[in-house]
Image (cartoon, rainbow, N blue to C red):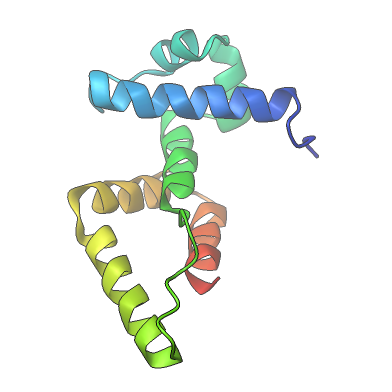
Length: 124
């Protein structure tokens, strides 16, 4: 198991940040593992060893992007809380970025683990 804050965590954060930055700079079609690795300061073999391929890496990044930034608002009642949360969730998932994240999660997730993590975030 990876140590929190250890080398594994630093590599993951560097690679995730590189993917997010490069998606904005060069776009999805130009994104490659060697480009991500160079930006993150790791070797391509590090990326392949940890994530397998670009699809699985994009899936992992998307799962983290779909994690809520904060707890849902407390509006004073369960019904109001759930309605506000559902509306916000729908808006986010229906946006172009949300659709891209969902697509990445599913396309690069052969064993269903990342989809399960997304479901757990929503349930939480």
